[in-house]
Length: 430
Image (cartoon, rainbow, N blue to C red):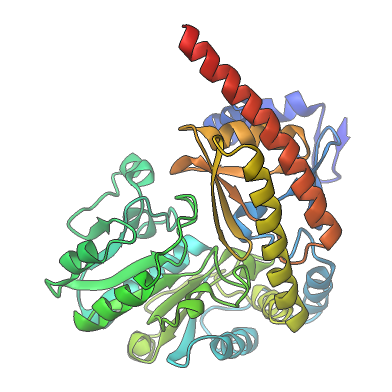
């Protein structure tokens, strides 16, 4: 019997059966079929425990949601203290906590940024960004990247890969234009009609396996936006909050976006929260009709107080220094592993602790994921390029845990390499 106080299950098998019956049958079976029988139970810091008691080191972090670890003690204390005075608040009225977080956020952003609009999750924040761009430019079209991913909500899903949009008849090519990454000529072709409201770009496309922008690409997109009177929308949901060694990835390229979207990690994994930071021009609708976007739980006062603590922790000089140390240590360690298996482990895409590991097989990352899981590491393949493993260590890791992760990763990649070689031999003899 697994008794959690609020609910109980007879066994893991019982829980999985109920998951199929009452929650999501396809997602439940997908992981079982992939050899990942994980049902997350206890979690603490950068560790997860399965219902069966097996410990895993989390280097997926649910897309960066657990940037500061699971159940971070400082965030728990902050939330408990906040609950002595605050609740979610009332979205109709001026708010103490929303105002305080907005002021703190603006101070971390480019000088052109002025105001913050709140949501409860990244997809909602992308919807807000698109609506804001359309209002500002009085145009409907949005340009994003081929193989992009910006969430699953009403407008956001239309900007991404048709893997998600077609299922719900949300693919609207007349409104949402996709262009190849790192191709400025294609970008200019999309913008030169001067009928695009905004260009929406993840600073490093996460679900596509972290391909890195070529030198000058993001700056080139910004110049084209200025030339053709289009807004630059930076999606920093997975790359923000010190993951690249600076608070916001986009700032490393010297680009000042017109709109910036923040999600996942700003919640600390403790309270749902997302934010859209906008320039003076893009905040016009907030003066015209402040009720134009309403969200009951977006920007809840408890969430904003947690978000302020997240921002403070991420901005500590010692945290920034540690991220730079970790980035170098992971780079060294991963290069050493790559030298052992150069025909299998063929690429490392890295900016800070945003890392993608590329393997020489159409679904190579799934093979590696399975062996990492067997050796106590949880990472996940890139949905839109399963050759690439999303490998996203947290920013508060200890040096000792960094080395343990690398040791376990080397063993798992070796096991995956042996499986790949066996598959190759079987294919030759078949």
